[in-house]
Length: 137
Image (cartoon, rainbow, N blue to C red):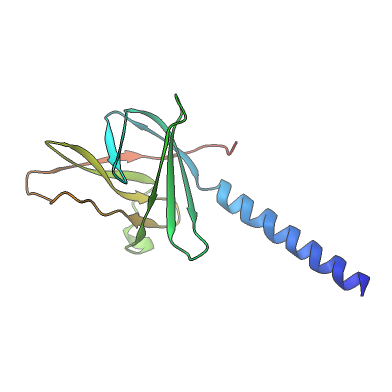
């Protein structure tokens, strides 16, 4: 009985280590040259750590943390497109007169969409900011 309990514990520890390493692969950085809105929060231009994860219910969660002052914003998204639509890790913003809104986050594995409360217009511009891999803290 003790042997079975030890094996279960070893499997649980192994699973935890694997999930931690998978999460570390989704720690990326972006240099965003303009102020932007995400989840109704305005963030300043700067260098950001971008962390991707899922909630217990499988909802994609992206955390953007300003590397200068550690201010952060969290956004819940929905799956976006297929792997074929993925043109590389990046943040996509829709910019208009009132500023830029985070609309998409693409990790190496998949894309996530984030709704905006502002109406899209034909003269809006899209800004795509590349993400680069970074080490986890």
